[in-house]
Length: 163
Ligand code: GDP
Ligand code: MG
Image 1: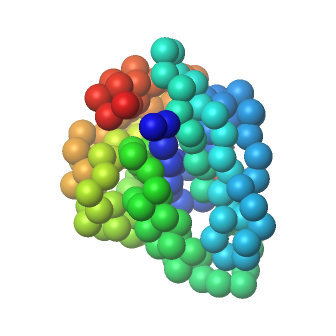
Image 2 (image 1 turned 45 degrees about the vertical axis):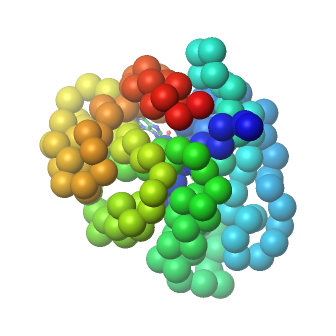
């Protein structure tokens, strides 16, 4: 069975940057079913020795036919259902927001392994946000940078355990 990994989180935290890094943009839109799957991109992710199916939850910024919160809830529900592992990303420079808490609440109630990626942690600007991310109750957050490739070893470690 192919390992399935989903990247979830509010807009602008860096999900697509990570998706592109792991897939090398070998990706396609899932389909255009209104409201759910058009928001998602699927690709073949590669990280060191591992290959997996990767979902990015994209496009929330561009739609206005439903509340953002409702759409995010639905996406995290789908991620919990379909993924073997969920990568929950937040922007450590912005700190933990109410929207991040919505995702965390949902994921805490699920039974899938979750790794919290405190993104934009290159340099010092993410230090406070990284510390805050412990309060999400989803285990130790990873000091991460999707742009600079920091923290990928921790992602690999979790994926290896589940694969
Ligand atoms: P998404 O909306 O969650 O998919 O976020 P994007 O991947 O589109 O990134 C949103 C913004 O954050 C872009 O301007 C990225 O260049 C920036 N970004 C992504 N990863 C990092 C990172 O590791 N460090 C910093 N400083 N910026 C990042
Ligand atoms: Mg995106």
